[in-house]
Length: 237
Image 1: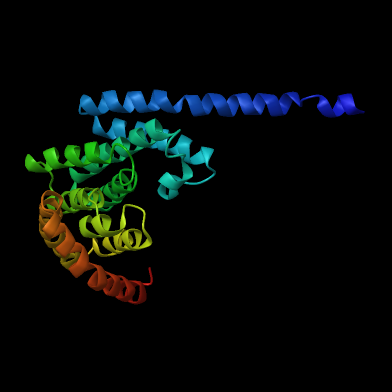
Image 2: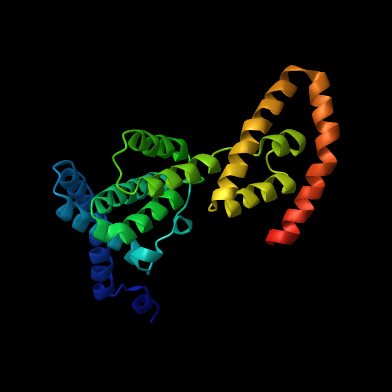
């Protein structure tokens, strides 16, 4: 009886092998898509890119539109995460070519941003989109510029909070969360850019002069704690 339990069902084994083969085939579709994209065969490239994404999605029992970086291990799957981000980058550029596919372009850009922020290659992806924007190639330039800003802003530290409390303090983390909440608004982006322009200068000066460092710590500590409490209350962080 025990031996019967240990016996593997041939049908289950065959099914597992079939699923593993399908999963391995994703890279074949990806390579084909990249070649087709370079050859400017955009429609065929898009088709193969979606086949790659569909296989990944099926592996997580979800659909492509719900594929999320949280489904992956940020350390073990970093190579796959980088590939996915570049797939969405190519899709965004491909859909941008047509005014009829702007919705898919925006969705692909949003996925590109999601699969970029917080990962080791974030800065690399930010430079990719920056160089593309500098060439003024996008039809929907504003959307690509906003995508760059989101990645670029997210890569920056909360300078003064980090200087006062450290990288992983609750105040630093909450201010970082606040930054992510407001970066989708025009006023929020302007506020963030002005903050970084001023705070980075203050922190740089404080690191060179102990008197300025002491002044920064004594004058900013209480106001920053008050701001932190207000932000937690107003934005439910």
